[in-house]
Image 1 (spheres, rainbow, N blue to C red):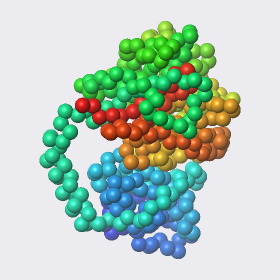
Image 2: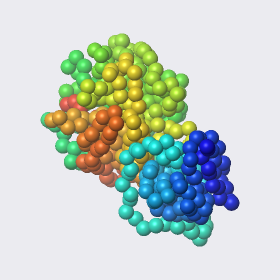
Image 3: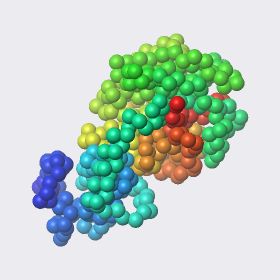
Length: 429
């Protein structure tokens, strides 16, 4: 028996896609997308809720306020089976935002039908927001005026320019404190932004790896610069370049070798580069997860396993900013197994990896990106209290937020060595 999908009279494109995907599944369930309660009385019923309401007008109202929606799938008893505090990447485009939200609803329905019990994100405390046509007209007028004024507003500014800041770490860093003024920014290059910093120590020297992205090409490459004992950075030089965009150069040791794993989601899969002559010459040894487009792949050892955490670009249009996936293996050459709860987190307030995990006095800490209001708005630190192939739990420790005119971030941090590195955004004159 196939899953029965009840559709509304006024259908959107995603309704047909969901009906085709769910209707091909075996099972005895009714999925009610009518928003009218037409499936009431079914023995097994699934229904999406938008900020607690089956009416998608509340989803549109939330998007209209440029806020992220809380999406969930409930059963016939009102019990939540799957949920996501979903990121919306373009908050100025209502249609695109709705498309991303509905793509996430589709994924949640598939998870609920499959019986996946991923952790549920905390529901944000806020009043309901219903769609208003009057507000939509006002927003359209503001967007039109903004387009007319855009050539004259902020003329001569490079808005949101990414750069890197360094700090000498005297002992174990205090994650509960973040004073951006205590960090020393590198000289800004208005033609190139630098982001995703990682610091690596080899042969009693420290090296800074980062993404460099020239505005002229829009294609990131991996660069490296030497660091002095006093935390001063030398000149960057390119160490890995591909025909596609690269970023997030996660560099680590495993199996007696030094490895660099840049994000290569534009190509797909994960590239494992081994240092043939550190830090300049790298050899592409193998690729993992060829069928997935993963972002910000982060490796670390825990309880006798090598773990990989990453975000994922979905096939149905959902955001890569708000879901965290995990895999584990005996070692880098081992057979990678997915976590039973994948995705282990679906929350724009701290899912996507934001740098190297830290281990302090037997405790494991994870930096993650906050993407609730915008991409790269701030960094949040979690302590991972449970991580096994079947369970995951973490608690929030602190938020790092840069303050100042035209400044945001950080969205990546590496504090594992004697020199700490973060990135940030700032408008350049």
